Length: 133
Image 1 (cartoon, rainbow, N blue to C red):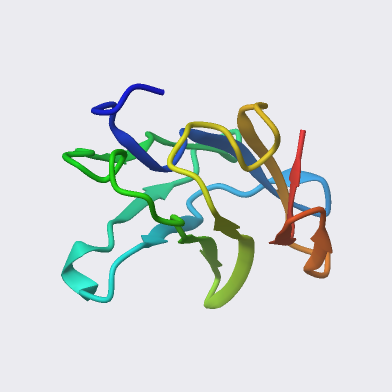
Image 2: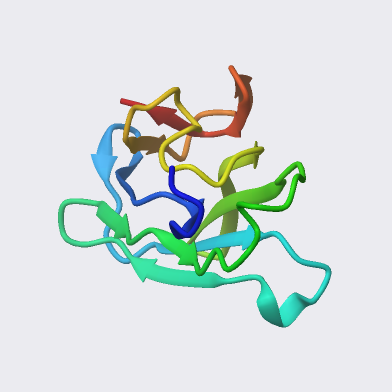
């Protein structure tokens, strides 16, 4: 990565929400990247699942300015929650320690299958009901 490349706080995410193996239509997903002590600097994105249960979030990026030149350890707390029929599910929770894209799954794109009947669990470095596929 170059010194002035953009900081990737959360890469592009796509996936599907299922309940008992069937697509969930109209579920609300909320994606958040916490990287600052100032709440107004922590980006939030929302989306709704389509007829096939699918969802997509564009990448959350910020200008690097001098951050890539100053020695520091990045830490971004990533979450994706799903709200369906009054119940909230934790789909994804991860501590990102790099501003590079797609470091969450060692270079693979973040594509999740979220089965609402599944109990959240730790898988590798992430936690939740969202299984990478």
